[in-house]
Length: 420
Ligand code: MEV
Image (cartoon, rainbow, N blue to C red; front, side, top):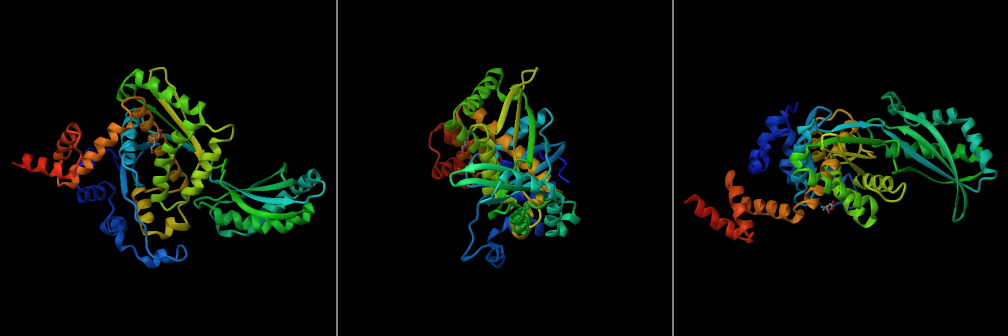
């Protein structure tokens, strides 16, 4: 059990020391962490069975975000991403959030939508009614496709029918709502939709074409809020400017695309680390953000004490069973680090990271700009590459930035001088 994710100075440790610390804090052993510590040793046979025409693997850096407290539980969060600053920024925002209680997360349950597109329907409104009249029978037919899901408490829950005009005429779209429990659920709901199609054709007298899930998973939402201490953010003016930065995103799609991209920096990194489908999450997030004209996935307000309150709401179709999460050794190790029990809990974590990431970006943008932080982090990496350890990393990094000469060669010279 992670008692405390506040592992101070984690960034100053060597990679080996970080792994040691990770083991200490999570109670995991060498064999648990082996796949991510030695990614080169991941069995290509496993990957060969995941996709087609495999010739090798593409590895990404995997970092650990610290300081996260979500629903009173501490988490060390694995993030797989190629972009510098993201892991540090998330950890920093989580440090501020935990000061006033951390993140509070809820969800609407793991309800996925599958669509059955029907065309050439005579009298579509009457056909819609006929479908609804036999809804229970259709739900039962859907559930017969996945007795295991039903045994675990999931299954088809509801069915809705929409009729709309399209470029090629009227369409009747039957939408099955399925509780997919701890699975992302794509296979389960697609199988159900395919099984229902012949019945829908018979009932409607139309022709079914597509039978596929919707990534706009509007019944599978996660909501997270957190309060960020105004002093830790840098004062009332910074708080105001963060709100103004958020209002810019809400008012302008050009800014909003970048604002939401920053949120997805955090979200995708955890989604990838846990072997989930980041394209599904991206599609869900942006289509949800565009329901009433493209807007921000986050909201910001000031509480009566002058602190900043941030919230996020988005679809979160992630799973813990099935798919790469169960097969890929690194994803399995990441799930162990997180110690999540349900896919919903994983969704809470992912959305919290999204909120933290957005707050960190807005704070930097609304104050010193992001380049300063980027440069400082880059300098730290350069100092570490040159062989600096412990406090020397920061000392050398500060000198490199001051001298505007962030180069490994210079870091080595400084290291030699300091050693003397
Ligand atoms: C960079 O990957 C993300 C940011 O551009 C996000 C933002 O502008 O809010 C910093």
